[in-house]
Length: 116
Image (cartoon, rainbow, N blue to C red):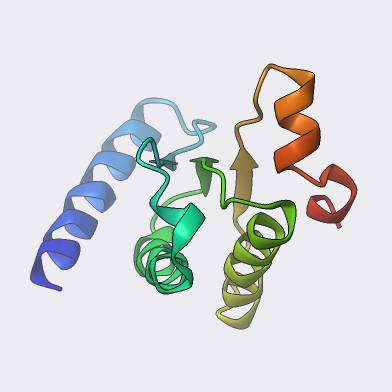
């Protein structure tokens, strides 16, 4: 947990210095899961939500380039993150990177549910 605390301090300092140079700048963290760990493990998804929540109050949002193995799992993952942000009164943005192939988009993302 010390690594997270040290990382948060670095993020706070970086965000502060960048916002001083250009106040409208939006500072987000990016989550990328090339090994597709979120696809197979509910515990990993819960841990990712907890770690994002630990740092998100210091940034303007989170960008995620992830899949979770099914539309339902991805929706539940994003919903868990959003619910935790609401619970903690964090008014932050969630960005999702979408696949460029229409067939991948149709298989992996339920856009109507995700935008609610």
